[in-house]
Amino acid sequence: MSSFPLNNPNSKIKGALFFIPLLGTFIYLVIQNLIFINSGLLHPNFDVIFKCYEFNLNFLPILFLLLGLFYFFLSFCLKLFQKFGLPIVLFCLLSSFGLSALDYYITKVEPEKLLIKKVDITTNKIREPITVVHFSDIQSAKVGNYEKRIFETIQKIGADLILYTGDFLQLPKQLKFKDEWEKLHRLFNSLSPRFGIYAVYGDTELALYSVPKDDILPIKILSSKCESLSFEGGNLSIYGLSLYNSKNPLWAMRGIETWLKNHDESYFKIVLGHSPDFSLALKDSKVDLCLAGHTHGGQIRIPFFGPLTIDSKIPKNWAQGFRKIGIPHLNVSAGAGSNRFNGLPAMRFNCPTEITVINIKPEIN
Image (cartoon, rainbow, N blue to C red; front, side):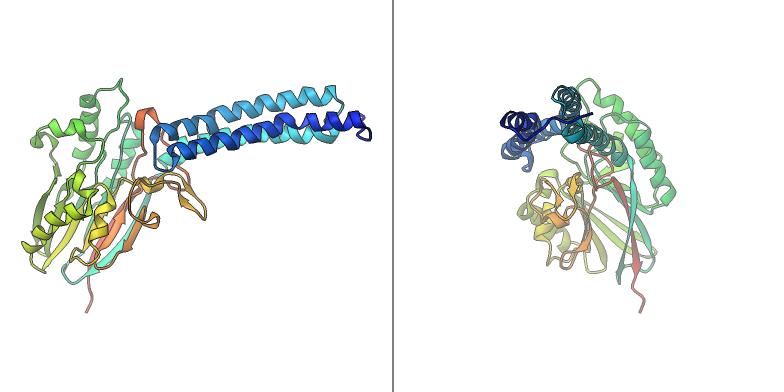
């Protein structure tokens, strides 16, 4: 097939016009995403996040597919298929396929990947090792097979103590809290660690506040309360923050300081909070371990950049994982589930769901 000659003014004009739809698409794409960023994409504003997702991973694949078909016919009409048409058509079709594949991966694959992360702590306060499972933010939109897999995984670990840092359910309007909570509660009942299950309230727990505490068992909710455990290997004390206090370091310290005064140095001390913000005030306190969730690790983590947003005041590099932050250790769970705000699909990239196994071991003299 002969290509359209480009050595005269008319052909140059036609050649320039040929690229206008593609160039316009890229300008539109860039401007629209800048609008999303300016409107609160990184703050985060979850309505904007939803719109950004729909635009980039629902609308753009269709747009690139239509653009590819458009260029297929246009290049034949202008006799430019071999020179320009074929590369552009292939680019548009690959872009459409790539965005659709990315949509499938971040909404279907990675949100259910569920990694088990293991960390060790050594201490002179414990004479026998203890296995602690920390998980957070199941945030289920409907309790089903994936949630069952979370609890089957935890059962196999055989933990001595299970600690959960909030956000149990995040249901769409058509589902009833009572029905889904009963399913999730049965899954918690399938766990039987020897030292029990302790949790704090998260952001999505409004309906759970009205459930009698006895009906929540075996989960013990600690909201500005502590629980102390003594066993043959030592003493443990767990202090749970209210949701508000977990987000306000100064308020968190009021309760924590009183709790610390009531427990001597022999106790291994653990603080639970939904948001990790409280940890900013604890660097010099005699707390051994801080546990939190809420950030989901950012859910979308860009290589070499990190999470786009974490909805927290902590440094972004604290938003996921285990580290020492002074005297205490801090573990921020990336979450066993994903944010479902207003029907937002589960979305994760470079940030799989996780369960953390913390092995507390005695120091060897």
